Image 1 (cartoon, rainbow, N blue to C red):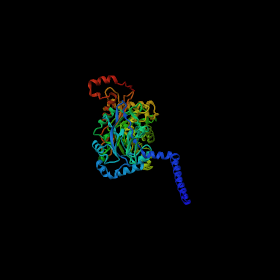
Image 2 (image 1 turned 90 degrees about the horizontal axis):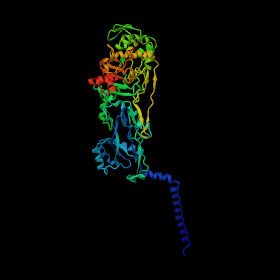
Image 3 (image 1 turned 30 degrees about the horizontal axis):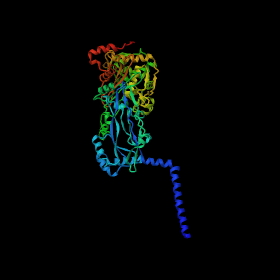
Image 4 (image 1 turned 30 degrees about the vertical axis):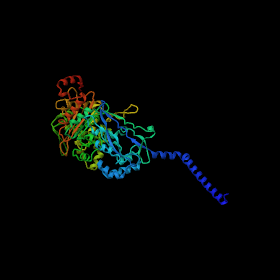
Length: 606
C-alpha cells in the first residue's frame, strides 16, 4: 500500500497534467474559435501569393477606323524578393547588363511593398536572354519573366507629339497617383497617352498561387476560382485622318515647323505635325540611355512640340483680327481707304511695306497684304480694342487641346506694357507693328488653326481635340467626351468682309496666297511672313475650304523659310487637296477634270 507522501505526489502530478491539458484546451479553443478568422487569414497569406496581372492597354483608331496604335508582346524579367538569393546579384547583373545597385534597390523596395510580389527588373529583353533565364532557373531562384505589351505603330503616321508615349512610373508619380499603381508600372507620359491614361490603362487582375514555406510555387490556389482577370483598357477613336497626318509629316521633311488641320464642324484634329520629330517606336519598350540623350541634345529639338508650344509672331495672318475689331466697332467701314505709298511714318520712324498698293480698302488690304493699311487701322483702333478682339478669337490663352501641353501665347495690353517697360515709359509707337502681327504678339499653330476655323465658321469656335469617342470594352458602348464651343459676337456683315478678303487673297490676281489653290475647290486663306530677329523670316499660312461649307481649316508654319505665300501656302493647298480628295489630283490630269467637275463649289460673290 502506497504511503501517504506517494499518494500526495501522484495527486500533484495528475493535477499538473490536468491543468496543462486544460490550459492547452483553452488555448486551442481560443485559436480555433475565438481567433480563428484572424489567424486563418494570416496563415492563408503565408501560403497564398497574389500575382498581379497587367491589363492590355487600349487600342487607338483614326476617324476612318484604321488601327494606328497597337500592342505587341514584350518579355520582362522579374524578381520575387522572398525567393531571391542576394548571392546571385553579380551573375544577374552580368546577364542583364544592369547596375548592381539598381537591382539591389529594386528588390529592397519590392520587399518593403510586398515581399511575395514580383518586382520588374528589366523590360523588353531579347529571346537569347529569355532562353538563358529559362535554362538556368536553379541558378537564379526568384528570377522569372512575365509577358507584357508594348506600343506598336502600324501606319506611316508617326504623330509622336499627338500620340505621346508611355514610360515606367517614377517615384514621384507613384506617390501622387497612389492606389492602383505599383513600382514598375507603365503609364502615359505625354500626348493622348497621358491625357487619357485612366481610360487606356485598364484594370489590373490578380492570380492567386499556393506556395510552400520556402516560397516555391505549388500551383493555382483553389483551382483559380478566386483569380480576378485583368480588364483591358478602353479603346480611343480619334478625329485624326491617318493618311493626312502622314502626308503632312512628309511635307515638312527636312524643315522645322508645324501643320495643324481641324474639322470646322466640331474642332476635331485632322492632322497635327511637328518637325523635326522622332520615331515613337523609340519609346515603345525600353529607351536606351544613349538614344534619350541624343534626342535631348539634338539641336533640332525633336521632342519639342512646335504645334502647341511655340510662341512666334503670326505676321500678316493676324490682319483679320485688326480688321474685325475696326469694322465691328465702326472705327472704319468698307468704304474707308488708305493711300499706300509703300511706307508709313509715325513720329520719326518709317514703317515699310513690301509694295506700293495705292488707294486700298479692307478687301484689297487683305488680298494683297497691305501693311500701310493695317498700320493706319491699328493706330485708329487702339490697344484696348486690339487686345479685346484678339482674346475673343482665342489668343493669349490655352485652347484646351486634349494633349496636356500648350503655350498660351501672348497678347500685349496696357498692363503688359506697364509691367515690362514701366508706366509712362512706352509710347504709341510700340503699337504700330501690332497691326501686321509683329511686335510682342506670340501665337501657336494650334491657336492659328482655331482662328482659321472661326473665320470659316463665321464666329463658331470649337475646342480643338483629338479624341472623338472612348469605347468601353465591358459594355461595348461609346462615350463621347464633352468639349466646349461658343459663338463670337461679330455681325455677319463683318464676317463676310473678312471671308471675302481671304477669298481674294487666294483666288484673285495680285493675291498673295495663290499657291494654296486646289483644283475644283475654292480655298480662302491668308499668308504671313513674320520677321525673326534671330534669322530668316517664318512663313505662315492659314485657310479653310471649301469656301461655302468648310470641311477643313489649316495652319502651316515653317520656321526660317521666308515668304508665307511661297512656302507655307503651297503646303496648305496640298494638305487641303489630300484631305478633300483622298489623294493629290493635280498630278493626275485625267482625274483632275472629273474630280473638279464633281466637287467644285459655287462661290457667292459680294
